[in-house]
Image 1 (cartoon, one colour):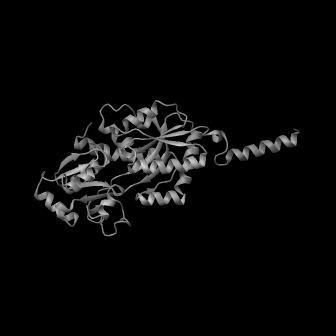
Image 2 (image 1 turned 180 degrees about the vertical axis):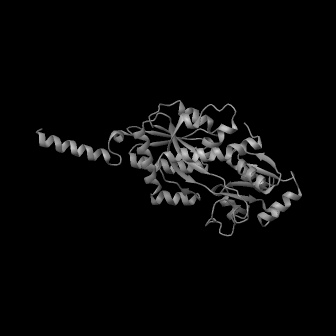
Image 3 (image 1 turned 180 degrees about the horizontal axis):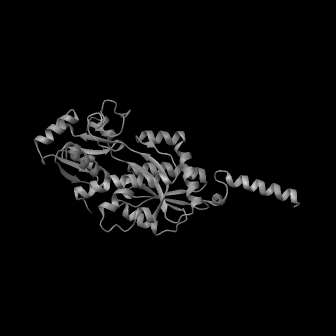
Length: 322
């Protein structure tokens, strides 16, 4: 190779190194990637994770295998991830509770989210809806507040477990409205089912978790979180419209073990952001009433820090611990 050819080759290599997916991380992945989900198969989180895994697998020409490891509000799954090499081949499908709530819920949490994990990409955020059993016979959220204030401590509410976002969301509602209720925790989707069987009359849940029951007239939606009404529930007012500051984060993100090469993190981030623009994936987000969140890896840390600072004091004030 003469000097002119050598210079041309060097220039071409420099250009290639600046292109997405080209350069140091170009060999990733060369084998299957695991996406660890801290919920059981068939849950809303699992459905979203599998849709993401399918799209990433197509882009990478490598299988992305979803592994379900439920238990202890994500702690078991995270411990598993931390036991794997920090090479990007084991990713964790995190929710806000795993990264922002758990440090305040567990006195002896076996991991530190900010030190043991590194943000890869934000995915989406879910609005919450306050639902009531038809048997309660309330037509508006104001009706419920009046009823609850007239019967302090007599009305129970369901959740997906102690410290679960559905639990904390309702505790915030109680605090903001000045009502007192009894908490009845369930595992997984059991909370919504309990409303229909008459065990508990009210609950806060992500919209996707109860929308089929709302459509079937088995649950009555009374208020939603967010700055605007949900297109799927146009007649349901926001808490803000009703004069209550009830903002509940319901976001999902992808994280990896700390120490994962920055080049791999950047590549996976870019590929996930492209998936978020994919029309088919957008449609799946819509089916689950999720709003996509695009951004650099640092967005995960920003969201985590924001909600830890907001919800840490609330969890301490309510004296919730696991």
